[in-house]
Length: 190
Image (tube, rainbow, N blue to C red; front, side):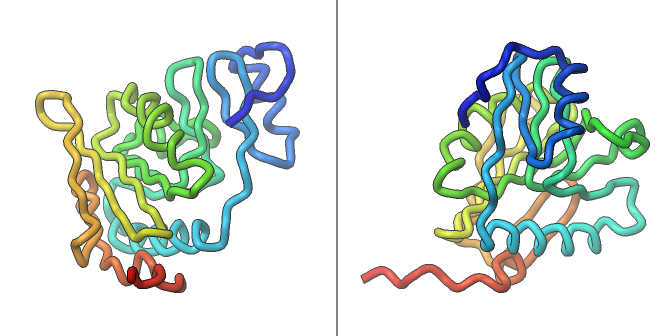
């Protein structure tokens, strides 16, 4: 992501500016970064996960949110995750900024994969409430869940060969066929 050419903004100035924009922009330490448009396969996976997580969480104290919602990390970072679940009462009462997601899911694309795996994950790890970070690659059908252990360290749970995506932090399980429904399978390897 490239910072837009403009003077550094405060969080308040960014929020006021962002509310007037037709496109979404993330914010980090005074700089604003334009979000790239998503591909059809990206939207399909987000939609599939949203539907299944919402059904699984119905009646629980947790709710699922998608791409248009902002997560604030301290006073210096605003991110737009593809999908997240929060069980936090303050989050469930907010209209603008969520601060305590339990689970964040990012659907990878060729242009954002490196950022989602490194810098973005490093920023998300600063959220004390976050227990799980799941990366879904619609092109390769890889699913990797990073879970915070009791020691505070993050463990990788590679679910790529499983028939089920498990979001253990919120007790949701979705069949991989349902995660990737509506998407052509990757080409067979020779």
